[in-house]
Image (cartoon, rainbow, N blue to C red; front, side, top):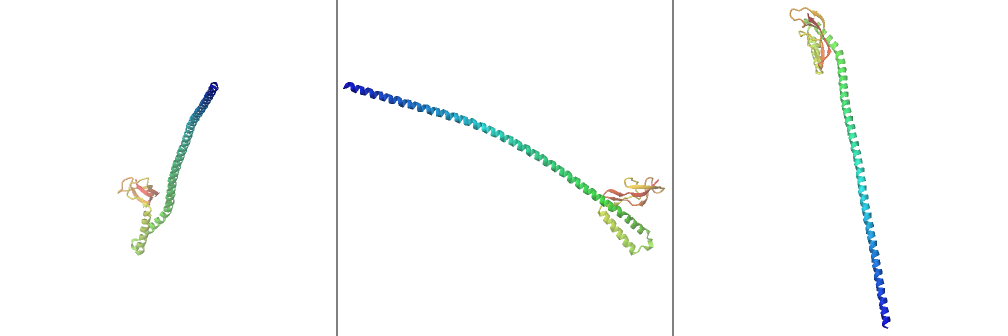
Length: 211
């Protein structure tokens, strides 16, 4: 009986050892699996970190290229705009100058056609005898005065000639005369009155100069 009890105890001890060993092996397997999973997770995290860092660098590089391209495009557009503004300003100035020149040309043309009429008007007034200078004569003088005032308003003024020194920029000498009162080179007679339009000669004075 004692032997049976001993065998039973030994058998139970062996079963306990076997169970303990099996549990230890299972725990070791679990620990190994957890270690492997942890290592795998660390590897995945490290790989993800590297990929994210690489993606960030790629995105930043791409963004820098896009920014540089936009800045270059902006600079190109600004340069183009400045050029167009300069061209427009030159065009505006050129147009204004052409308009002014056209106006000046047109005005001079009209003035040149009016001057002979004024010449005839003045000749007619000068031909009237002193005894015949009545109210009609005075009326014609007033009309002549009004015409000259209107011409002066638009910039037309007569050139001073009689008694002045001859100036080829304003006078056209057609003859020479002798004079005891005036020095040589002075204008003794004004044969046809000259006119300026805004400091530009419309018609030169036709004069006789002292020898």
